View 1 (cartoon, protein in one colour):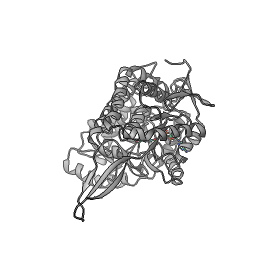
View 2: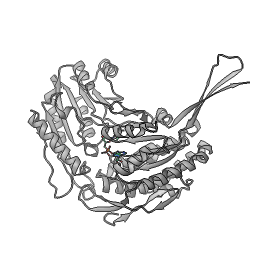
View 3: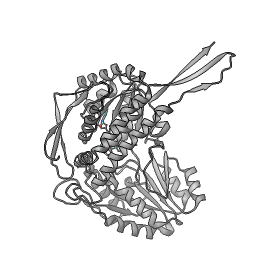
View 4: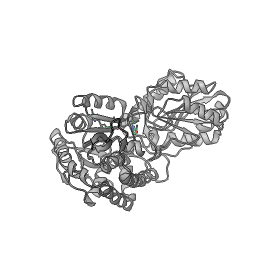
Length: 479
Ligand code: NAD
């Protein structure tokens, strides 16, 4: 499947269509050219949005269970091609094959899960002040949803946006990241085979400045569902403001992991390491900084440095058994290099790693641990998005929670302790959208993934995530 120089086409109104301009997609592990994909201009975006707009009323009139059946058919096709799809993800994104397969199968399960909501979408009947009056609250679709995606879990995030949108009667236009569009076109190829009505699901690829901007500025969009960085989220909010378009923003994180002196240290090391090397540290919800209590600080630092140093890495397609692939691109690698350099200049001590891994080609960085960090350092405050773990020593739980909360971000957090009372105290005081106790950071599809502060507005998954894609309509009926 690699180096065959595929050309993908936009998917608009049920057909694959040409664009005027194309960009190249390359493998971050070795620089090899993989495909050409459209850079969609404003006119392409408008065509896709018009198709979605025109298709939406008939789609919304279908019973939800019929809408959901298309998701189930798609899930079956995805499972049938899981290995091929995983390879497409690995090629363009760089995650290891095992994780890519988890992503593909999780996506199929997610489609089935959201399909199950079809018979559970519920309104309300509200008691009235007037005799003979009924008050009904209906849940209705918003209309057209623009889904704008990042590159780190590119396949799953298509489903996270389109599945709740479609089951609740919306139509969708997706823009994949310019780094990882191939898997989105493969997803679309399978969706095209299940006979979804034309215009219900559309894909326009391209960069943020042209294609993304055109999507967010259009009055045809009723909701922008965005996952990506804080800076882009902020720009999207500004663009959406002109049309008062609803935004759902899943943004960056700087997840604190708190390790207390009564914790199972081996468990904490295992979970935090897993959390830091998964997808080469490029995950919004995974441990980005550690606050360890003084009494166990040396033991923890020693063990995690050794565990991180043991991590195997390289080109995931050439070495299928490695634990970690490359970073996504040159910019991502340069950012990690510069942040580690500044941290050591500011007084952090390098326990392991700290260098670009010279494998001949690709954007590889060594698994890295920094101790002696302070809360005023950039490395403890800014999202790293790489396999680098900074550690700060604290005296007690309250200090750890205060430092954890002193952040622009508020997505996920974790606590390691054997004490139920301390765990509950931490959960009460920590100001985050999610907290994991004694386990690695990874959310469940039936939970609700949502951040506070600059980590976003609204959320995804579960009942609450489903209802993000609906609006209310209240009817007062006197008989
Ligand atoms: P990014 O913000 O650079 O890009 C995301 C998408 O936005 C891309 O498709 C890009 O083309 C598009 N875009 C860029 N500028 C735009 C504009 N002006 N208008 C419209 N669209 C525009 O993010 P990224 O580098 O792809 O992803 C990494 C970030 O995503 C990290 O910060 C990570 O924490 C975050 N993330 C968050 C979650 C979550 O659930 N909260 C999940 C995954 C990733």
